[in-house]
Image (cartoon, rainbow, N blue to C red; front, side, top):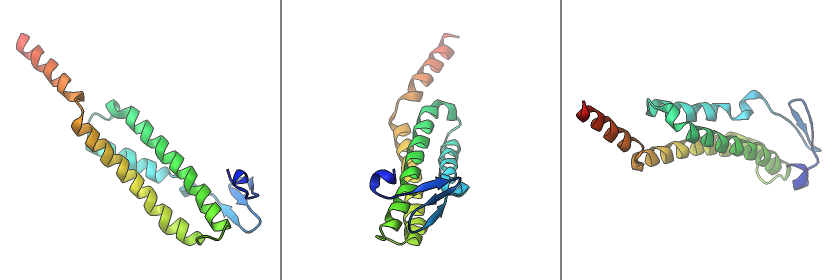
Length: 132
């Protein structure tokens, strides 16, 4: 992605080298904390986590893509000297990933509230009780 945007970069292990800087991609740069927080919010909100596995996987994919964009934009903006690395990395993206996680969770809560997933289950359970 960096090369297609005009930045000459090479990678060796966990380092991305450009003409101006060396960026070290450590474990905390991988977005795992945001992914874990998203899953934890869903898990804490329902006992039926497996019924929402499709949404959890989709949310993790969104966070994964956002994290790739985070790493790319951090390096790109720092190399272009548009915004300092510290501001991009420490403020902009830390809060942006937090807002993405909270936004996905709030969206899920609203969808869950409006859907009829459990109404049919309750009706069938009530019908089976009446027939006994």
